[in-house]
Structures are given as structure tokens and as C-alpha cells.
Amino acid sequence: MRFGKIYVIVNPASGQTESDVGLIEERLRESGAEYRIVQTKPDRMPRDIAKEAAADGADLVVACGGDGTVLDTAEGLIETEAALGVIPGGTANVFAAEMEIPTDTAATLDLLLGDDVEVRKVDVGVVGDEHFLLRVGIGLEAAMTVLTEPELKSRFGVLAYLWTALRYGRTTPQSAYTFTVDGRRRRMKGITCVVCNSGNLGLPGVKLIPEIDPSDGFLNVVIFRQASFRTALGLVYNALGGFAGKVRPVSGTHVWGEGRDLTMFSVPAREVIVEATPAQVAARDGEEINAGFPLEIRILHNAINVAAPGRNTA
Image (cartoon, rainbow, N blue to C red; front, top):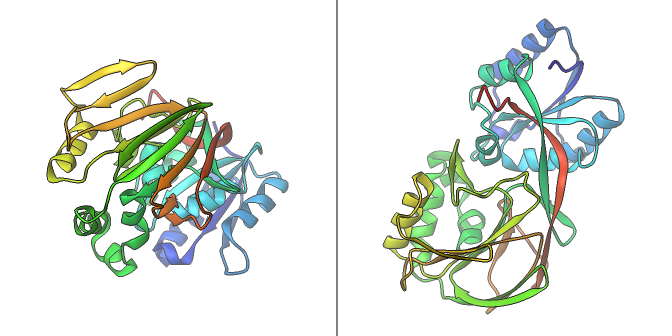
């Protein structure tokens, strides 16, 4: 398919160079589409521009930046007909990896302006009054994103998050998580709880748990019980190929790698209420959540359209 009216939202803080913006404009001009390129400002955020674009009849609104810029743009497009496009930038591009969007600007433009692009319906998570595309993290997972220094992220990218995890993981105490999943109450201890819309770990096809799907109408509640080197190795192994010791699926609930250190618990949910005792830091797509516990989290099924590679061309 081809898009006829395109808005491109550029976040100057996300690392796009003048040559990147020049290439985007050149390719848009060559495409013959009607287009506008708009830079964000402190008083004009991506969601505001996206709302204006959708109201103006744009059928594609492209976010140029990292996951924060993509989320903010997506918020302006919820339940509109306009499709969200992504040209990855910034430190992390997990949503782009989830959707199998290329990281190279030229390759992404080939996709968005070509005939092989597909518009997919994607879910959006809601925590309190705020949205997320990827996940809500509580405990160590949230600390990794909130406490990692911007300078480290700029220098080392995703490795900076690993450094933070190693630094804080062994001293992170367990919390007692009480969570109500679609009306059923459960309790479990762990060092981190993650409520996922996307399970991607920042690489195409590499997921925390293979069945997590951002279009299936479900969240996945995942709890890690211990922080250890064995846990880290197990998570990497699971992301790349799945635990050989996957055991005991019961009514949609899965437990991987039984044992004191290497236990990961997962259950699908449409709505979940999470409490943590003692309280832990919480974040949505890397942004700290200031609302206190309990956290009320739900899914908006098929809330946005996303321009992505066709299933038979990805």
C-alpha cells in the first residue's frame, strides 16, 4: 500500500542528524506524497503534533526517535485511523524491534514509502491514566531504566542497563506481590514484576517469553523470584531459544526453571491490579510512575494502527 498524506515528527534530542532529516525530506519529495516535517518543542510534544496530524487527515504519522518519542506519538493516535510509523533513534528502540522495523533510516524509508508495508492493529496498555506500548516494570526492571544514568546510556546503549542490573540486582530485596488478574487474586514473592504488552528485549524476534504478542488483547504478568547470575543466564537462554526445563502449564499459567534462583512465573491477563510490599520503584516504558500502589493496569485492544513489514516480507 502507499500513504498519501504523511507527517514526520522529529525529536531533536533523539540523535537524528541533519543528514538524516535531509534524507527523509528527499525521499518524501520523491515519493509524491503530501508531507510535513515537524520538530518537537518543549511546548509542542509529539502527542500534540500527532493529534493535529490525525485531525488534518494524515494517514501516516512517523515518529523519529527512541521509545519515549514513539510512545508519545502513539498516544496522540489512539483510536484514530492514522497509522504510526517509526524511524528508530535514541538509546533504545524496543518497539521498532518488536515490529521488525529496520534500524537504518534509508531501509525504514524504503519500507514506509514502498508497496510492502502493512498496517497492523496493535494493543496499548494503560496504567492509571497513562499509556504504555511495551511494559510496566516494578522493582529491578524499573530500576534498570529509571536509575541508569543518561551519560551511560549515551555511551554504552543497552549495555548500560545491564551494568545497572548487576549493580543493584544483588542488593534488591524481595517484595511480596499481590496481584489480581481478571478478578482472581494471587500472591508471590520476587525481586521484580513486569506487566508486558511487548516481550521484546531490543532485538528482532528476541523475546522474554515467546508467546507475548502486542496484538492479542492480553497483557502478560511476569515475576522473577531471585536475582542471580544463573537467573541472568536463564533469561538470555529463554530469550534466544526457550528453557529446556519449561514445566507445569496450568490454566494459562507458566513456570520456567523451577528452583530457588531460576524461577520465572507468567500468566496472561486483560486487567491486573498489582500491590508490592514493601513498595518498589515502578516505570512504564522507562518513565517512572509517580502514582502509588496499587497499580491498576489494563489493555486497550487494537487501539492503534502501526506501519510495519508485511508478514510475508519481514
